[in-house]
Amino acid sequence: MAFCLKRDRERHLKFASAQSAVGRRVLAALGLPDDTLDRTILLLEDDTVHARSTAVLRALRHLQAPARWLHPLILVPKFLRDPAYDIVARNRIRWFGRLDTCLVPSPETRNRFIDL
Image (cartoon, rainbow, N blue to C red; front, side):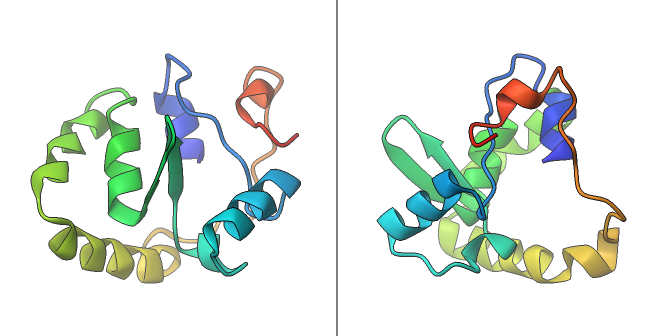
């Protein structure tokens, strides 16, 4: 989330936590278990919900370069992308570490969170 906040200068992306009322409603509406967003990113775009690698790659096109340069990977078939996504999701804390604190939105970014 912090990665996207820094790089989404046009403020296209908005965020909700899985534990919020909005997050719980989305999970229930999609029939997903409560722990889904510990390892899965969902992107609501128009009236379509994208998950896993598709959600990440579609979100990247809204970010500044060089992150947006990864968007063409959307052309790789999903059956190849999603297993790679799962490997990163399972190992992200081991590879990138865990933050000592939770992100607290600044006054400038607070309006990007739809559930605050």
